[in-house]
Amino acid sequence: MANDLVVFVPGVMGSVLRDADGKDLWNLTPAVGGSVMFRMERYFERLTLPPGIGNEAPDGPHAVLPADLLREPRIWPGLMPHVAYKKLASHLASLVEGRMVVFPYDWRLSNRYSAERLKVFVERELARWSEACRARHDPEEPRVVFICHSMGGLVTRYYLEVLGGRETARSMVTMGTPYAGAVKAVQALTGTFPGRKLRGVPARFRTLLVEAARSMPSVHQLLPTYQCVAGHPDGTRLEDVSVPDLDGAMVRDAFDFRRELDTCTRRNAEADRAAGRPAAYRLFAAGGRGEPTDVLMRVSAGEVRYADRFPGDSRWQGDGTVACLSATPQDWEDGARVDWFRLGHTALPNDVHLHRQLMDRYDALEHRPFQTLGVGFGVDVPEAVAEGEPVEVAAVSEESGLFLEGRLVSPTTGEVLERRRLLPLEDGRYRAEFAPPPGIWVVEVEAPRVTTAAVQQETLLVLD
Image 1: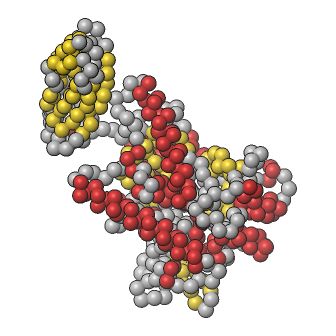
Image 2: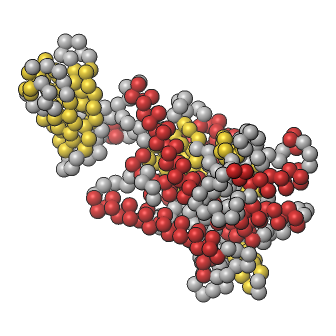
């Protein structure tokens, strides 16, 4: 809806990380001075986490401050060449001031920890935006539209489905989110980079890349959980094989993370169906395809090799990082509902055509006012009450999901004394309570989003 808060959650490397002095910790641009190789060595050492960090955040010299959205290109050789979010940021900046916020986070840490921080962030920002909406007399309480890139979608969905954030969301849009992980994470954690990707990079720097990645729970949680290991009759998952230089405990954690998210998502959907209510929020997904993408791996004689296509399918199967089947939400049957673009992983969120689709997610044209054939509702208001007694205003309608607003209005000045939303109960009933002072009042009930519905009015006497 037009008043919903828009929250952008970036992916791996999508947030600028600074130290306590405000220094950008991993800027490799030549303007910084000195050789790129020297800065690369320093910044990978600085970003490496202490052993056993688990689902917590480090302190002391390992702590960083997530400061801002990434707006200029950065690269982690072997893991991600990031073109940054400059065009997306420009698009989102066109929204009403204060409506769009960015959640920067330490992308090295466990997605579970980042989701906890997102929960705190959303509660604070939604309260701020709700107050601003009330100040301008917006009739509806806002919710949140989440725009997520890459791993940001995993962080957000964990918050929504596992941490109880579903009721805050209107919708969620993911762009290249690896719901089932990415083979590229195996390469980053084992150092088995395809030769075409890291030409001329000295061995000591490859070692730094791998050691830094191995210290990060988030990179392990990007490991592929689909049947990505070739050479077996029915395909095999990563947890069923031994891969050289891949930490077995961290592999199990990646699969535990995926199972936890899948289980909670399924249970929440079943609870919605059992209660006869719609899903708490709408899910949209966009992905890239047509880029050479390693989607399968084969382990033989202690070596790992990769394939960029599935057997019997000649199409490129992803966006250069995430396979198409992984960019499809885990609770969807297939990729038919995904909006596919022929774009690379980090180019995807900057595409102008995708931006137009985003507008339809957070500023969609409401068709019901133009298509409804006469939505109506009845109102029940007491004729007289004693001062201090709550006044129950009730409404009934054959239409479910109506937004009904009740108002106490002065019959002489037209001033609105109280304004409340009638909350839906069951069987088409809606209810709100008012506390008017003595006098004669007009009670108005309106469905402001349904232009063909009349405004119902009743008179109320409050005795002193």
